[in-house]
Length: 361
Image (cartoon, rainbow, N blue to C red; front, side, top):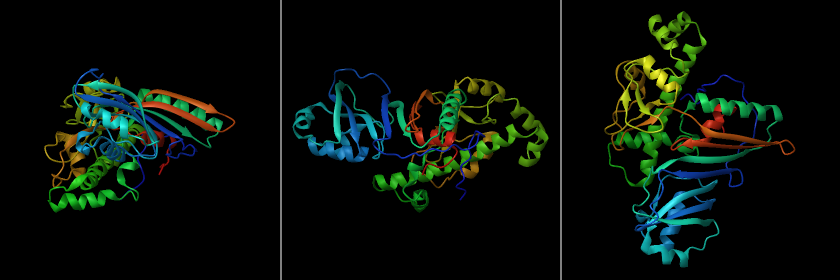
């Protein structure tokens, strides 16, 4: 397996020290919609440190005497971070919560009510604040200008290393489970198969980034020879104004959400892509997944596993745009504080790796 990540940008690597810890990594959820302020569900805005979301649901279930199934959350947040996320519980459990929730690592910041519980995916995105240590002034300056340029041009939406377990190989177990044809047992098996799904997506995305790099960095005749594509196709791809090239049959979605469509006119779609109106998507293979068509299908097929049917298939944005990027540099301490927003499902570490050009794990 090729572990070398395909980066979209060609600058030289930077040098900084990244550690995902509760003192250096902060993340706050941005809810999908405003809560109704009344209803049968209590909505808690919770700040937690050194605790995973699954551990949090266990703690809340114990305090409220509810089943863990009754505790709603929009996304899983890491243990090694200070995180703010929204949780829903049935309103009648509020008294028990007040009486029994005692842990120091969980702080309730706000309470409101809502007519419906929070479900997985019910979030717009996340705001991050990350401290990078041992970064020199010139790299800190370059980091800032590069991150701001990426706000305009976007980045590939790879899954972060966190998705693939401690040894980065959990997808291999996932592949084995997916191919066994058995129904998935429990959340651990689901996570392993999802890691395999994510691995295939990352491999496809890396191939498409490499392809786009070849097209943008060579004359058409050279690129055509390297890729063994007709030169006329290369010339049509070169006309697209953006870095990540679209092919006929690519599956796109309005950005940041909407219904899927297919690329029928490459230049027309490319212009919408360049203005952030739509973005191409990659396949998360599984039951009922929408597959690409035409040329894009041939690029996708090597990374598709039709034996993976135990999980639902989906599409994931291949290209995203960070927002609200701000950096503050402390010259004495050589620490750079980086604030930014990413849409749901995107990894902060992927953004940092695209700027730093080295694996953070």
